[in-house]
Image (cartoon, rainbow, N blue to C red; front, side, top):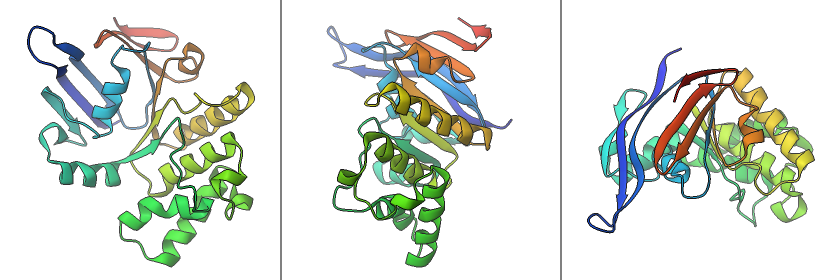
Length: 233
């Protein structure tokens, strides 16, 4: 598999000096295209900060981050926004749907930013909703759907533009066990279809469902292993 993500000696330091906090403390890792990865840790471990770096939502204090061979660690905000739109599909714990838009319109949003016309983006949005089993809910607004259905819309939105990376931040955190199982099955199917899926989680049961686990503590990687056999740590 080709290399997708290459993070080299990354630091994120808040309040530099005597009272500094190292949210990331010399993190290095590589993720190839087509991997199914969980980044796991307790609150304060650095996993959310690492997610922000991978998702180009923030830049490191120092270190390099190559995404598809481009060093995005030193990019300006406008360039980072373009990378996010082209390279990354986000799935958030809180769904982040627009309340006054129906499901298909929510899924269309990243396609609008890519400049697609109304007809092609509507077609793609409907296809994406079909993939997650919500084609019959296309005209429903978030308030008319369950939490699990809203998360399916969020997944459809994330995959609509076919980004190389699906980045899911605690995607089952607000869901019951049955719905969690359904969402994990969808993410597993996306991986099986060739997507790179990275899940940020605190849940060991979620981590057991992926191929590779990267465990953080105090801003450092303490374990990096394939389920069934350790790589490092």
